[in-house]
Length: 69
Image (cartoon, rainbow, N blue to C red; front, side):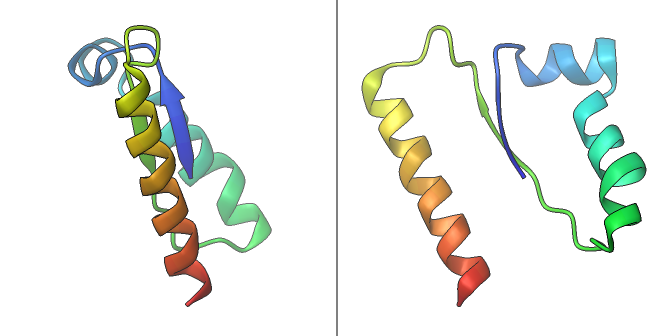
């Protein structure tokens, strides 16, 4: 899974316990046969620079390509 977020990682973990991970990995994907759940979060989007977003896109491309290799 690739997600974007505007919540800093430490705040999300401390205050919310990473709800997207719990929802996808425990409540959705197992029921459609997905057992290998990997997640990359690009954050924080609101204050990110063009170069950082370009690097995120490249990282996403590499992740997708690795799944097809």
